[in-house]
Length: 412
Image (cartoon, rainbow, N blue to C red; front, side, top):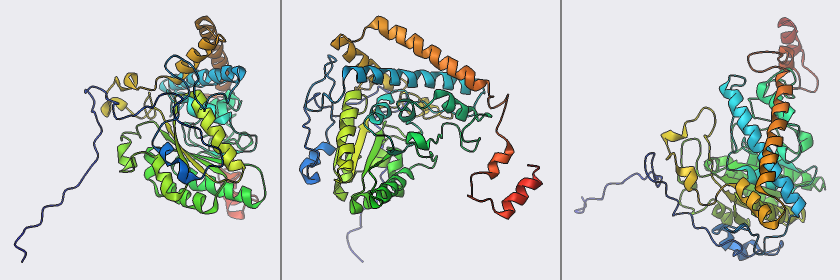
């Protein structure tokens, strides 16, 4: 027997920096100066930009100025439009959250603090490109001019619901708007988007795919399978990780492991990986445009980590006060995306606090009007509902005899 007794093994569980009741601390978030991160050529070799997986691309500085090599991808008019998109999404969120509390729908998920990610990215895409989103990318629809009434009809599962009550609230599907049917089982988006992109390339099409995933879901095997296929076949796809610091009740360190950043995981697959300030509308758009061009020029996939913060609860079924300090969102160092873009436009002389208040009122009225129209078709507990007959439709191109018999037996 060995004279030396082996040391006992210990099991390691990552711990968040702070707990509820403690002082929020984001000192671990290294934020480079706005404009300091270089912009490589689109056709750069991934091995030459490894450092971008550990930095954060930023355009807006603390004075509201757009600086550095990533600035200048949007006109003043496009920035004003982007501000309205984010404001519209925020107002939409507020009304639908209240509607859930009133029992008009069973479930809702806010985007508070993350509006720039999807709203800015959408403006870098072309018609026909396909997004494979998670449940916090409704900005892809808002910025793509999808009717809010249709979104509300789906949330209420009423008689005008375009999905006939066959999807949970906020699990939208809009093929014509480049929004693939949303799956509540997260991480499926990565291999699905890569497969769609491969099919587009095989058929000689010009459309690209975009995948979306949260920081927590990167721990799923589908995430890694998607990276393998994207890298191997140089699929024309942009792979997005929205790192909002928290999964439903678990801090990002559980899913990140020892990689340092989520973007760094792309390096082992030979995929160019970048991190961007997800609360900077201009930076998100610039990085999206760079990655989209790369995909469209047959240069392969790009992995983007959007560094942002989930201000609200994970969903209406979640109480974040149980696992994070209440004041943590106020301490988030990258600020509020709506306020930052507003201040930039004021700095340009294209906007003012007075026009901001006027726009907020106009957009609030627009959202309220849409809600009234949607509620006229019914809500979860009142009014019109989809017909039970609809559950038998849309499964097969030609309904098989056994489903026809079941439908008839049910009285439809």
